[in-house]
Length: 499
Image (cartoon, rainbow, N blue to C red; front, side):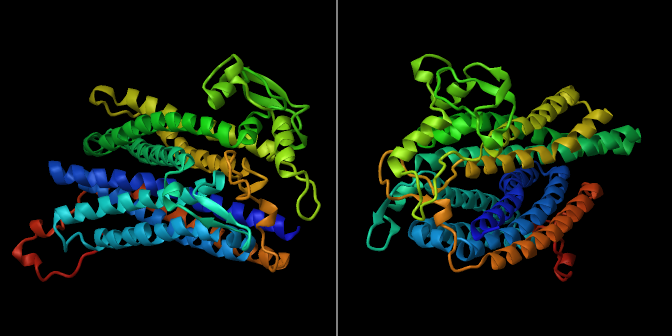
């Protein structure tokens, strides 16, 4: 393979792998902070036990996310140096803000939270986890600001002397309408992931303890795990509504800014009114959309996603052929090297990633409804199928988020920086022009193989640690280690780290 293909594979592997950890950290941090708040306010020990249990899982996930995220910076400089040269003045600004304003705050206050259980007051300690949760979400905002600029460049001018995009207004970049659609969609999806994670684990434990029929186990299921189940359920319900709302907003912006992505998501060849949404299609999507049969379709839904109208002239969506013709007329049919340009993203990946993003989230819906039903009126369920559903549902929103990211990135191809349809046409970059010209394919291949092996080892470590502490469950007792709870005899005891 050539350098471009290898660089694409490396970017896909590192980005998708890193993004597995991101949603859980973003969503679980506020939930752990909420559990600790409940302990401070109500003084009920169960919330402290849940805080330490899910807090430990949060720390494992966050650590792996940091390790896997560091490589992103290196690969931009190594495999995508031409991209970095073109967009560095703009792309680097939100990344620097993320490092200085968000990641620094994350690290400082996470340290306070880990080591401050017996050294700072309850209120200061509680504030530290909330600041960590806030900084985690702020970090996502700045990362999405950089990505949204690639999807819809604003606040930028093209300097013909340097051949680079240059920052004109950081305010425009941070108020990009694409960003303000992507950010709530990402955050609500993260909360859906975290809610499913909490509910799935707590449901499994509740059923397991209830089935033992031992009074002390049933009581633990009722007083500890059932409240955690409800935290997860209501998080999923609220976050799910947010995902639907923000996804609808994104779809309509996508139609305006990247019509080819919306048409490719449906494998729609020709422009049409009342475009259907196909649940199942068969045919050679890899070759184009002409011979694809849409077997099961819902009339007008794709048009509604793009335009807000189910039928009529306002519901018209251009097909992939229309977009190809428009882009060819505007940007040419060949690259600088003379190769033909296909402005249609890979149809098979775009089509199926869009459906998997939506379909896999249905497991969270099923878990939320089932758990809500089986725990109604204070009940503790011993239904074995509910416990199995809890475990089955846990990985599904992780996969849904990953497929959503794949859809977002693959659907904008062949562009690394998509041209803004309202102007600044020169601020655009084809993906093939962003790859490094000085790095030989062998170097990229070697780094990709080494990195993939390292990631495989990290995946095993992550799974073993998460599995180990999950099956240990919530501790039966915990000690309030805050200074307010210490007796005079505790003053000289050794420093106790909560984790």
